[in-house]
Length: 247
Image (tube, rainbow, N blue to C red):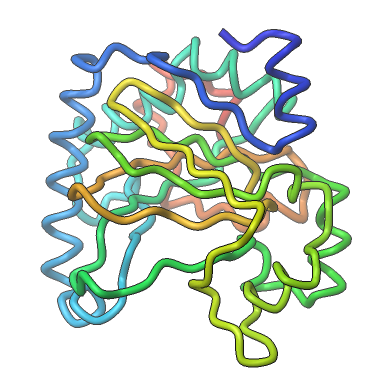
């Protein structure tokens, strides 16, 4: 369980790895539901999947899953032990959405360093984002996963010259280059990784990875404006869920 020491670890490094946090057998129903979503998504997005995709999103919508299948995911999202860990990092968290990470169809496709906010913020805005509020990835591997490579402390510290040039592909650099401060975090079934969306990171490909990311955020307008109601539970589900977690 997360304690004061691991809270300090997150504050310093931007991530916490919880070894053997979940019972692997408890994820079997989640894996079945994720497989249904993934097959349907790949069929509908064949060209994108075969050319460049490494993740999908919006698993909890009604597009590909039944109400019963969606409830399996929302039950995990509302899991009491998981939320106890999340609450140590994000006070009174709000469910923001889901992503599913998988290997690229092209086995030669390179992975890439990034900060999540770089896709909708200017460089100056990215710097300001390091002071909060927080968006938290909770990565739950559904296979033995090569995991994630991160730059510890980058959730509060701006890029070094090397990191910025690689991440933004400046001065001839590529965002797939190795970085001196990179730390790899492999994940086994049952492990859980909490990490800041602000930090510099990249996924590690291989082993037919299939990793479910649940995103939680602070309840502030600049973040909750990104939440789509179609990804939220139906009213019929609320008796089985922690209603405070949802909009």
